[in-house]
Image 1 (cartoon, one colour):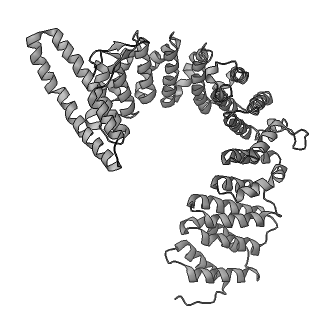
Image 2: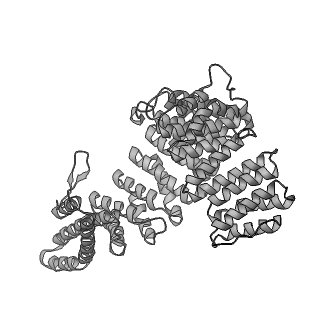
Image 3: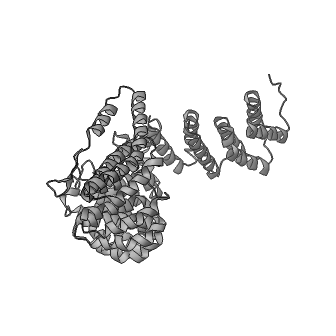
Length: 548
């Protein structure tokens, strides 16, 4: 390994690892089998445990002996050599951790020590990288890092400041916030772009572990939102999204500022480095839209502003580009959140308008896509629009019914949700038939429970359904569920049977169900067995059957 750090073209030091490090990486990459790879990694981790321990004891002892013979300069050189070797060993430990081998008992404290004693950027970088990967919010070594981070945040070297801020964003805990917050907010005014951007990321972490601080730091965040560099502004949006999720009212005064940022991004006025696949700053568009959507309230003027900017964003997304679908998805999510407000319903144009409105055109385009992901977004948009106008489903019923036969289970489920949300007396039997078909083929117990619960809600919502029809449909669902998932249906059936005497038409259907259940019943199915017994006693007409 190169023993001295040499400055690179960008003013930072270049350093290469030793032949041992490179040989190890080549051997792992060249492993023929998984077992061979595991053996190499386990052997290396054991070697690291020994080498890091020797680094602490024998190397220090030999350095002390040599220092008597050669003086302080030799001792200093040996100390630098020891730190460089420790840094390389920790890099190997980091590789082992990423491959699933724990080095906590011998490497974590060494990483903390390396950060504290580092003399070069290389050592500092390796130390901070290992700390950010090894430690976590509740780790017992976290508090040992506070003084080191404070010292590095006060450094004149912008690279060291950025490293310290990045480790704050990785491991900061509630106990560290009072000590670090003033210095982190001070870095928001630093002249270096990377430092300001890293400070915003660190601030987001501090706000996450101590949400009550958002109110007090909002003024400083406003300056960062207006930063001259778009990348700092884009990073600040993540902090504001977190703030809006906690307390939208605190961010509402900045609605016009967010709309201004959104229009700048739509017009392509941000740096071209933020563009992606022909769409100007799509991630800025999406993040800003998420914030704006959270700021809706009962004020019509506010909601009209939000609705208008969503349509402007959707208009830009409709011009195409690979990333435009992600923006369209964000717009539909925003509309889904917004259309439930009474102040917005009057702004949405009817389906009969010619030409169709922009949201409806976008949804129709997605529904016609052959890509399953895009079609799913289209179905979600159709479900959203059906809240405003139930006739929307009728215009694309063929697509929805086609979705029920899709091999993609998510599309199948979403199509069924749409049909169940718009069920009527004329369509409920067809919908229940689809429910039975899907419940029979699905292996997802939680989904089957949710689906059968919604099916029962559908039955409850049909006022003209008589007792016989209700019970006939409900008992068809019982055998398809695990015994533990039958309680909801059994409860509904028990209430229905208890409220009114069983009619002459209902008793034969219940008798048939009880007979079939008793013949096929597993004695461990306690819920179904109890229900069948209760029904038999209630109807007083169950003919005894002999169980084989």
